[in-house]
Image 1 (cartoon, helix red, strand yellow):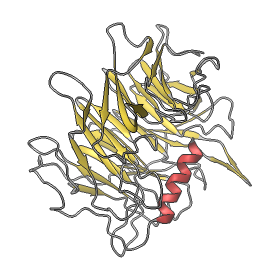
Image 2 (cartoon, one colour; image 1 turned 30 degrees about the vertical axis):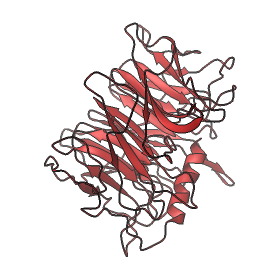
Image 3 (spheres, helix red, strand yellow; image 1 turned 45 degrees about the vertical axis):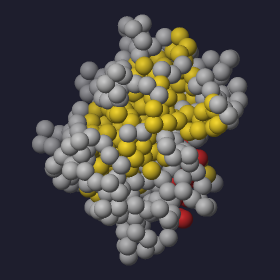
Image 4 (cartoon, helix red, strand yellow; image 1 turned 90 degrees about the vertical axis):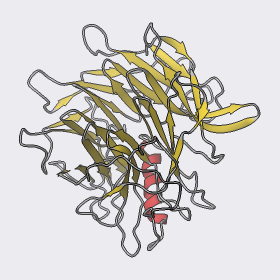
Length: 430
């Protein structure tokens, strides 16, 4: 799945024509007064001390409190065999500044073909790393702080039954880890595996505590490539078939009083009013925070392309129920595929939308991340972002916005193809 994603991102960068307007213009769609927000500025650039070409540093990013995690899954190709790694950065007492990592996390098997780091997540002192294998790697912060280390535990799933691949997005919230499995032995319907932290701490596990499934899944639908988790629920992209129609939807699984255990279907299905919705094309394209769920819909192909968009759903007062979106966000670029919605995140400042193939008229800016601040009256459909984030040393085809993460006032954006198309990668803090 890693290399499929990298090919998708590379395709976005190579097929966008120069000189096409990708920045939103005011007044294109319905507008509403936005809550005033502080203008964001880049405050730090993160690099790896052992930087080299083709490691794709910034393919995935995550942040929790004062700790930022940046993944570099590496690559395997003729003459280039580079195992993946994950780099950890801790905010100094003086504040964020340009820096290299305080720790490098690797897999104990050091397998150069496992795609270690194509997905990464952090919650408190726990970091979770996905791979192309049927393994999820868990790292717990040592008492003395993060240091170079291999995993604390490896989570796997039995090859019998569904035979989940564990090759989708990984997420962690407190003592719960979930991983998407878009491929399995029963037609690749897709599922989400959930693991609960044992009383004695994370340890190797061969089976999940809960399995979340799509009751109306489509064979080869590869559901749950992208997932997200909050304190109360897990959401994921799904290929859904019901009442004679196939749709791309977002399924909502709510945490039961007994916790995450057993097999569980969704409590609500979130639809788009757009019939060409294509949710879950990449990890990181779904997010949840509080009462808001966001999902990016990337154009499924590079010919006769519908424009990409992001749907926003807000939980009704009575609780989550099956419904269509509350609002739809776009960047006013209807004529080509710029990757709008490749990555999304929700922060107090608003909704962040990574657009790794965005261009400005007359200047290749190598990608952008758009900030949509919430209007006073609530989310409304718009194609005019409040701010546009760029990287200070941008070069052509950086892929800036391929990944984005936020926690509180800290925002992290990855640019895995930069600088100068070296594919060594960068990450930036705002």
